Image (cartoon, rainbow over all chains, first blue to last red; front, side, top):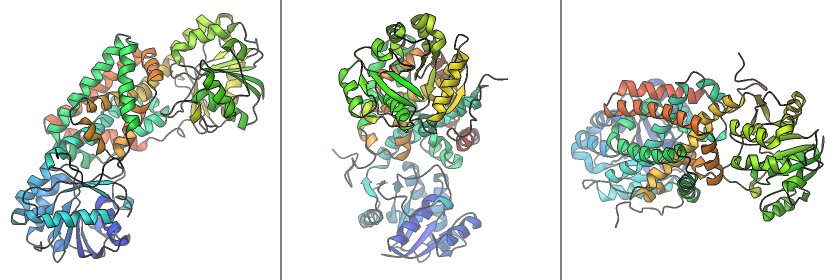
Length: 298
Length: 298
């Protein structure tokens, strides 16, 4: 049970986290701050926060738990803004989709309070951002990746693990670098491809009309192309080296398929499709990962 | 009301069509033929067909309605096999995902009976093929594209339109060439990209472990990668020219995004993501297309 959650950023992720904690009876009071006062006000109306704070500093003052749910590019400035208000006992977490850059921002921004910070990435979300789409069940059954570094206090990793588990999430721990490679592959790359896919179609004279014919395959494949432009601009830039490496691996696989198609090589083409189909057919969302496994473990 | 449906191919599409017609009371008897006797037997057990025929010729004999639901590569041989059993009044349709090649197969295979054939592509399906996944509601609320040619009897287009409408589908009519361009863009290309995406990940040493971390974005984006290898091998090869042209358009859009990412150009990157996000955010599955609109109409 936490006394006070200081919530910096009252959007989909922050709002859902606050609602989940309240629903589980894990927090007594939520003090929220958002850059936009109308967002903070809406979060209060929806019951995600109890009190609106006029600054990040005041939102974290007296909090024993802090969640920073802002675009990753705002991480360093936000850490700096909260540093002098942080209690020595406070557990601080973020929800960013990249981790190497957030850890670096925390080193620069939190300085002596780096031990309080447990970098976190809940693998949840929707293409609809904003507090109006927040829900208490957003993290239930989802994985949360924690990427502690050397300076992170072990006790804080334990508290973070218990907290996420208590709202139904499955906790996985790994190094920030491993996290960023993995998510470049399974999250950032598909977003990049989905954006390029839509742009490639609408660049064509008949493109808009083609879209009217699209069916359920298109719907699911392109759903993530509707994601928030600001958030994804930041993520793709923050993890650019890993992402471009993944794009290169993708391009090679695409070229192999295109070569088989161009040559009319049914045998090679079927083998390549069959390989993809088996892998995807056997994949199951979460459920396959035991709690607290480590990607970098031997 | 039809007296007898001759069903060639008792898989997901054929089985669902038969079940839909039966449920709507639109057919008195279904005679089915499949290459594999166990499939035909299963279709009979599930009530999709009433009688198993030992050949395509016997399945269409006496039928006033014929549905050919076989892989597109088998079209010409199947048309040839049924030709001498076809009644002059029979309405013949297929369910293929490509249309130029099927029309050509019909010219060669049906010859004097070409007027009976109304090329059809129901935009429905699942990644799970086979009669066991067939359902009477598969086409409800979905679009069906008809691509009649000059030789197609006008009365047959009308009967086909009424029939698909009666089982809840929305009928769109266009030229075979326009169909193939459109579906290269909104269906065949996303399948190609999804196959390449999965293959690009598992080609990496840590690839399988990355997949364990994947979340709902990955799940939806890659769902179609689990599609049937034989069916999709045929589709990608049948429509290869249009598909490779679409892959080229995609690659250009991808390169533009990658260039912005590599250069750290947040403004250009956000604009490109924003464009994609708006288009996809405004897209609605079917519902946006009025019945019987024509893509090639002025």
